[in-house]
Image: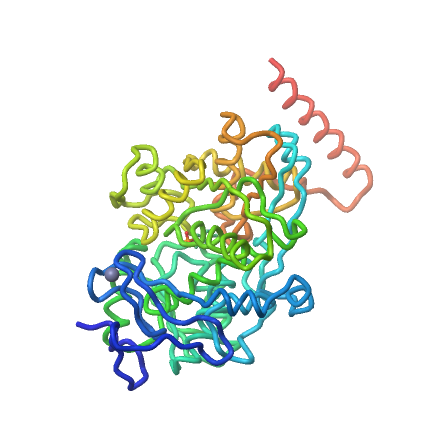
Amino acid sequence: MTQATLAPSHSHHSHDDHQHHHHEGGHFTHLQCKECGAEYEAKAIHVCELCFGPLEVKYDYDAIRANVSREKIAAGPHSIWRYRDFLPVTSADPIDVGTGMTPLIRANRLGRRLGLKNLYIKNDAVNMPTLSFKDRVVSVALTRARELGFDTVSCASTGNLANSTAAIAAHANLDCCVFIPSDLEAGKVLGTLIYGPTVMAVKGNYDQVNRLCSEVANSHGWGFVNINLRPYYSEGSKTLGFEVAEQLGWKLPDHIVAPLASGSLFTKIYKGFQELIATGLVDAKDVRCSGAQAEGCSPIAEAFRQNRDFITPVKPSTIAKSIAIGNPADGVYAVEQAQKTNGHIETATDAEIIEAMKLLAETEGIFTETAGGTTVAVLKKLAEAGKIDPDEVTVVYITGNGLKTQEAVQSHAGEPLTIEPKLDCFEAALERSRTLDRLEWQQVLV
Ligand SMILES: *Cc1c(COP(=O)(O)O)cnc(C)c1O
Ligand SMILES: [Zn+2]
């Protein structure tokens, strides 16, 4: 079996006879194996034919450096496409649904609670169009899919990816068939169905869904955003690094805390920082990178803890379904990055995830999903353990929206006070609630 059959184009590629060339309208030159360095044409291929290592997009940084400036970026679109010089597309009109440029907010109240003086939140809970960071990677992957001639796009999803793929495919008029585990949260399922794709709910966990999808990719020649288009898809996550640097006034933070599913997002934020340094847009700086996993699916954290350079796959069991990948493709690179940057990878239990979702909501007014709960719970652990310096400029990445995982907090957020439409009923209810608050406080105090 050769991965080249995945490309719908008729050109036969070979890793040793092609010439590097600039793609018209883009500064990327080729794909390269992260393990053995073999080079490939920039087609729909994601694993090395020689060693099965993952392929990554390579660029001509001299060309990028000659083309970009802070001013040019600032004058660009209010979306991820202001960084198009760093993205693997050639189109003059990439698919722009307003993805990216989400708020970076100073988190003073949460920071005070955790003893951190310079805490920021990158809030992709309000990313467009489907309220998770996945809109970034899908905007890039589907733009590239269109360039490569695919008319059907697909994905293996833990939920958010299906939402993004279905929505952006609808906008771009691409046929869409997505695969999800059959036990996903209702909000994630409806948030996919509404866009009218074919939805396959597979009786199995994400890793089984993913395996099935690899077979479909081979037999149907569809563009799977996170399989045969994965090298392009993953580059979209770099924009989470670019935006934070720009929003900090073209400075890199001291420390980032981000969730880990496959480990892709985590490694690409760092790649984004390195590219800004390489092209002279920011001053060089060592950024510490810390990662968060749910205890019920923590193969990357486990490898980090044991100082291993390989991942032992696990069977996921956690409410943080969007990051429950038992066999993470970029796990090894995530471990390496945390080690090399003097960061940490920690876990949070389901109870801690729920507590952290409430903490973030009550202190900062941000309702995140379970993945964000995991990240904030780990941020809290690291802060309490002294693993984040109180003065470090720390950015925590909130990657998804709480309205999509309501099940997780449904019975943990209290109930409204139901009253008759009369003033005295309101007064009585208010008095009761104040008494209840006082009682709760007394319980806390004893
Ligand atoms: C997919 C996802 C992630 C992380 O994905 P990676 O595979 O590690 O890139 C984080 N948060 C949310 C909400 C997600 O949906
Ligand atoms: Zn290789």
